[in-house]
Length: 439
Ligand SMILES: Cc1ncc(COP(=O)(O)O)c(C=O)c1O
Image (cartoon, rainbow, N blue to C red; front, side):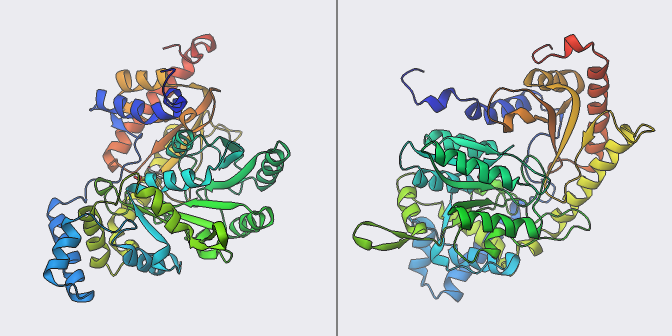
């Protein structure tokens, strides 16, 4: 190990494997752990239909002859992708984001998009990334792989503590460091479930402008508001100064099996001799050396799904949107029924009620570690994610993340019974036996 890249010894690179392994080890456990999309609406027969739809689009809308259609699907392809124009249309229809399709790079999942951007931003060892904490472990792991330290920014009542963001930037600069960007999830964040309201988004953009800081906006869950919640414009839709690189994923809105995501990078980059290029084109150079191009077949399936719904993923996901909103409601009601308030209004455990997305955080009065998760899976048959996986460092965090995305209504009910049993048993254990690591 000492001769390998130090990131390989970093806990963030073990997190996903560890959590997947637990899930595989206890296949009968009810899972509030994975942020996988709902499976009930998956339909193998649709895949061929989407491929046909995209093929017809190449032929009828773009005027390709049969040879060019065949080559587009079978051959190595354009580095920046072949569905960029459909992604641009989708962003216009669903998000009121207007972008030149040339500023889009279609990637192998959003994960690759994050990696490309971080690789480009890490120029030398003064560079650091800011990220609202707790944050998505895939971001932390990608940053480790390119030797980019991540400085945590506190979560505030508005989603991001802007005073802390400014303080972190100034502190880093005073120490000779260069904060290159701040990674944010303004909509139903993973794992916190928090969102920024419109005023907070505008203030964040103003801070970024004043501090000359790029914002990396990751938005895999924005399509899924809770019942009665109103969708708020993305940072990119409000971005008038090209301060935002937008990261997109089709994993939750189409299918993760396709591994298709994208980035929008419409910034102008000045090179040697004053040459100006699009940031997207610079990122595509990196992609050409990492994955060459995103699978044409996978793009065609996603492209076909977009075309089948007028490029609106809101329209394509009506059933999914209803299922996720229902599940959030059931989870909140199910927790409230099992953990009623005391006379003074407090509860023995606490949880946030997010305005949408897949995730809810439950705070408990005992440490939550991987050993407790293993015990939960083995003895109680229920899986969830310890929140410490989303924080930098080894400080214990007394909270767990519940995901509502891959469970049915019946599973929520049964899973909450199991979780409640675990929590009640943990509360009854003497405090000394509740220390992290004591199984
Ligand atoms: C916040 C966030 N960003 C990015 C991703 C990765 O997306 P993809 O599957 O498209 O790589 C996920 C996946 O769960 C996520 O939660």
